Image (cartoon, rainbow, N blue to C red; front, side, top):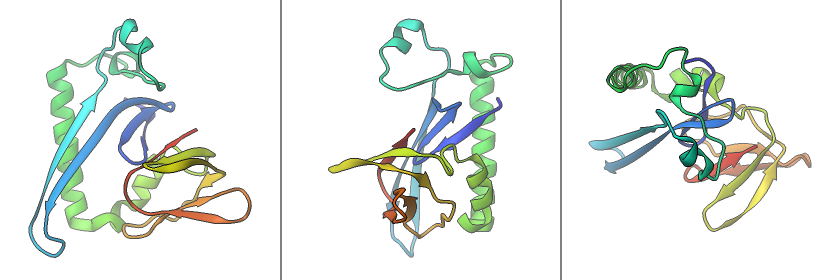
Length: 158
């Protein structure tokens, strides 16, 4: 599939329409052993009745793949891609994959509406380019000031 991008923090989008979501649950020690459980949900083929009931723009594999792969083939491709990404991340860390991540960031430099749990939503003039593994997420408020979101749960929509 072409045109798949990342929408922070955990969605894959095509033309700003949600294709898939990724959830990661971790446990362990900061400097010790840890475990991550990763769940991936993919919109494979959604009937019109389901599409009409979703409160955000969505797309499915059937609409954006040149040829619809079987569910088994799609699962195999996702698993192989994740395994390769984990090995790459393990070898190079976030700094080693940051430029690739940026190139896939759907809202890079775009105006967005930011929402976070228990906080009022606000408009951000643009999402800044300077992201790193440990930094806050810089956003321009359009007034010359920069607002930094702490890593964690927040969402962005155009």
